Amino acid sequence: MSSVETPREVRAQAKYVRMSPRKARLVAEHIRGRSVPEARAVLAFTSREAAGVLQKVLQSAVSNAEANHGIAEDRLYVKATYVDGGPVMKRWRARARGRVARIRKRTCHITVTLVEAPAVAAPAVEEAAPAEVAEVPKPKRAAAKKTTASGSKKKTASKRPAKKKEAAK
Image (cartoon, rainbow, N blue to C red; front, side, top):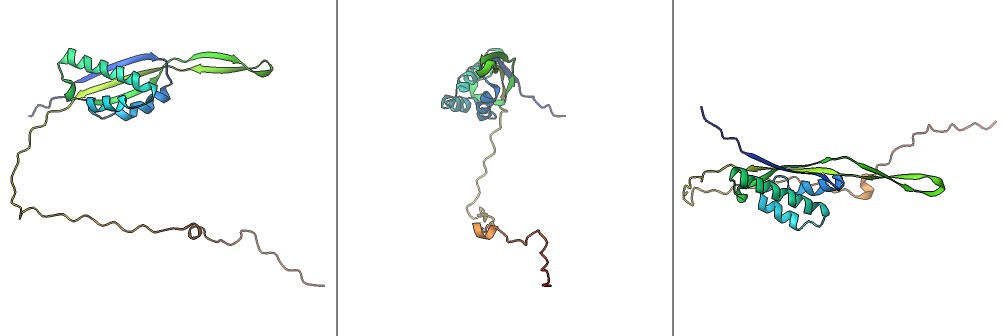
């Protein structure tokens, strides 16, 4: 029976971040599944406010991995990032004719989960003779049908029944 080593997961969370979860999710999607150095580069060049907060959470997760498990930063990749909604602060603003408009100041909880990349064994390099290597032809795609604006509209018969002509009396 072979023993399968499960990858160690490391997690960091920022709670009650004063930002809309919807806006933070847009940035979180960019780093999901990437290696840590690549995720840092993506966040560094993202011009949204959520990128700064996600960068801090990512740094915290990397620090947790190094301190608690001794895993180097280069061997980590982002397994999951998700943004959950937090409590909503409700405020109000006066409007015309004595009315009130509700203002919702949303908060969110940001979680980043890192996993150690599995160590891959170096594949055995076999030198093949040039005669043995054959080029594989690329499959040809069927040509797409061109449609024009006038060609896409079909003329259909009127749905109203034909009018009966009255006979002259």
